[in-house]
Amino acid sequence: MIRYANYQVYFQHWPPEQHGGQVAEQRKGHKDIDPKEPWLSSVYYHWWRYLSASETCRGICDTARTEDGRRSAKVLNSAYPDFGNVFEGNFWSWWWDRGWALFCEPQSYSIRKLDREGMRRWSSDLNAPDRLIVSLAVNGDHQRTVDEIKALLDELPRGNRSARGKKLSAALYQPSGKPDIPALQRYFKVWDKRRTDPGLEICEITYKCGIEKTYMPTDDNWRKQARNDFYRLFNKADAIMKNAAYGVFPVTEELSMDAIAKIRGDQMALSRDRRSEIDARLFPNPFGQLQEFWAGAQIEKGSIAQLKP
Image 1: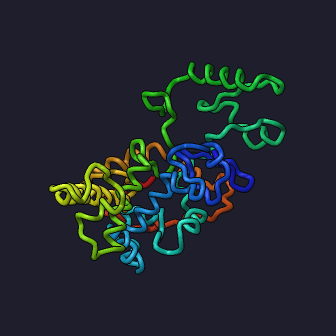
Image 2: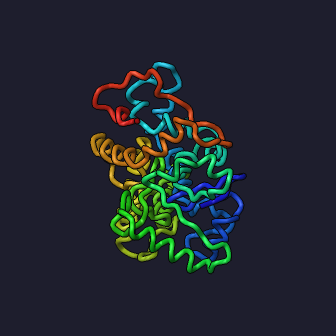
Image 3: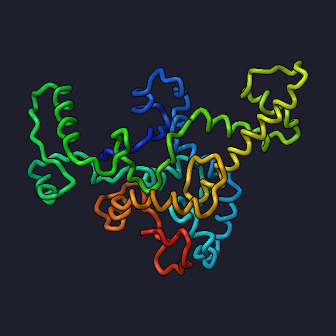
């Protein structure tokens, strides 16, 4: 959870912060956290970072510049209708405009205070099958209160939970698996070094990036090892960028459109509550509205875009 203005917004993974704050304080001393650049610890930042470097994504954005292109299957099958043009502005302008709304959990999943105002606004909670009404002792021990609530929840049906009991994300877009942030940084570092320093020999890139420490330039076969490491890391970064253009991140093997459709279909089924929440405009959105691209769109049969609720 992180507080934006007067709202408590929940995320499945750590959200980015520009100047330290809640996340940096909660994760103080964590090996993956740089206090000077705390946003680097967020998978959501890396999602944008890979997208904004993706040539596949750039081609989709170029296609969407025209009205006909915006309604083409190439664009509708991509992440563009939700993510927008990630090549305009910087990460923070994109995050506050729409990024946060793509990754936050439904507001309807939040704890609510049923005081007089709350009862008026949330009267439907009293008979909702997916809500649990409890009465808390204001002066009770906090840890005991938390433990008792956990015990009550454990008695209820599992619902959309993983085998380990963790609530599955209902965000519009959900990272695949458990993102490895240091690995994402390594892949991108090698890929970016190749782009920014094209004159550098391939076999020197991983060594100069400090990726591998198991060999030295004096070793007889260091060039072969370094080249192998470069292609391994570079190809993973390239695959992540291509998959990200279609809303799947971070997957290090380039996926077929059928595989992407399967992953997105599963994710969309989980995010049905969040999409319904946006469509019904149940909650004020102080950071801008997601643009609507789907009205009147001609969607080809069998396309990924057909999966949109």
